[in-house]
Length: 245
Ligand SMILES: [Fe+2]
Image 1 (cartoon, rainbow, N blue to C red):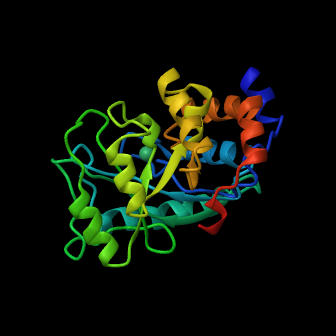
Image 2: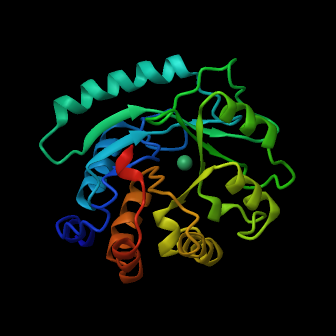
């Protein structure tokens, strides 16, 4: 009942972002949505908090060694299924991209691997949440040389990466954009990630926000986050670049 009431409150806190550029809602390919119904419910929640368009970013990493061609086929199937289920409450379905994990066990090499990017040849990448001794500066540099723009997903979630660290300084020098998870700002990943999320944003180091929605647990947390007054204030006072995507 509570979720029903929340869903009908339609608190469009994230309308200014327009586009969600980070979610795991391709059914059954990673640790995200497990079936079509869950994907539909999550997408409707994203629309209810203000997102007009959603790009899909399944994991590419050692634990989920997805292949791009297979992922593209699955996305085309999903789009057809969603068009049959569209009752006007779904957001626009964007494009299929990926969230590429750069850690010693898995790195896609530019020019060898065909990566799936966000619009504008923007590559969403992440680090391991556990390895703390690897900073793929050379791989980043290769991508940049080939005209890719890099976006680091959820910098606030890496416990080993400090906001004032040399690694962060180096990435910013290289022009790597940062994307904070909106759920971090409501404490979904704990107090440390919440604090770092706000710190990164207030320091002007964050170009994008993403939901990183995996399933209805995340979607419900997103509705709670849309009610958070501190988050609403942040949305009113900061500009992000999501709408360019
Ligand atoms: Fe993600």
